[in-house]
Length: 141
Image (cartoon, rainbow, N blue to C red; front, side, top):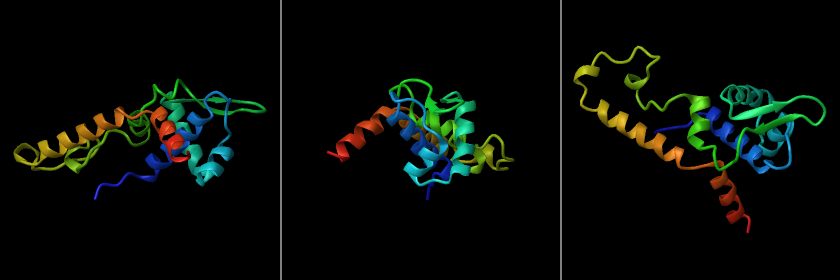
């Protein structure tokens, strides 16, 4: 079973909150954590990664917090997951930072897993934060 880690899940949820607040200024870590029922300490680690990837900006001082760095239409779920999780590697042999597999040269399934990972990444690039905002609006009608 393919599973997305909590980094990816919580990171997308945090970015969704920031997208919801796009025109209203920054949100604090505590506000995001409370709205999404996520640990503030864990969320801080994720927001630091997203900031380093330039998907969000931090604003210091009273009333400070985090804002998305761009329009919600321009930020894809794929961009968020790549910043938090790295490239999608469905098997160990596709992970460039791992030792890999000694069967890579003659593996008949390696191309299958590589192609599937590319299709998943491509799909995630087609969904923006704005799409999630539209879905929430549809669900709350």
